[in-house]
Length: 163
Image (cartoon, rainbow, N blue to C red; front, top):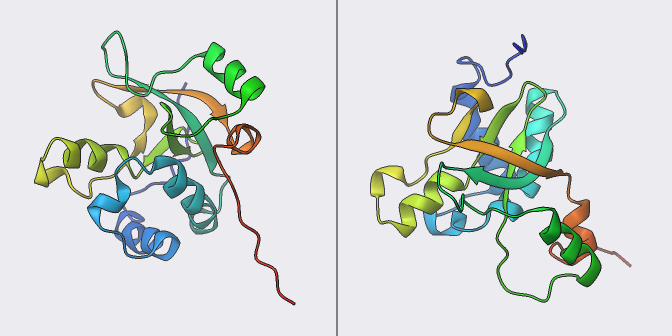
């Protein structure tokens, strides 16, 4: 299916780093490693305002052609977390942003892989393109929105109150 509207156009690309900085501030490469949930949660409303379209906070895994995939989880994992909550520690899932055009914005994956594997030329790389234009990998969405994270205790939001 060919979707006609593309949001991440060549004309918008020069603006992208400034939009990200407005949403996240100044981050070092090490600040991005394994922080996909927080980064994309904070960035979603900023990207939505910039592009003027709904931006979906997406949780899932990445099919990299291996048996295990990257951050792979299934419906049993989801059911267990919803029933028992999250006991703490790291969790094996991935977050990214999805646009109505099925374009994917992933601020964390490339930099995380580069930092862990000590590949400096990958530091700061961002994946922002149509999902069907990826070679050697496929994003596998499982959940949309932050509700799962809230219900399982994976996301704790702090309110700011004034007296």
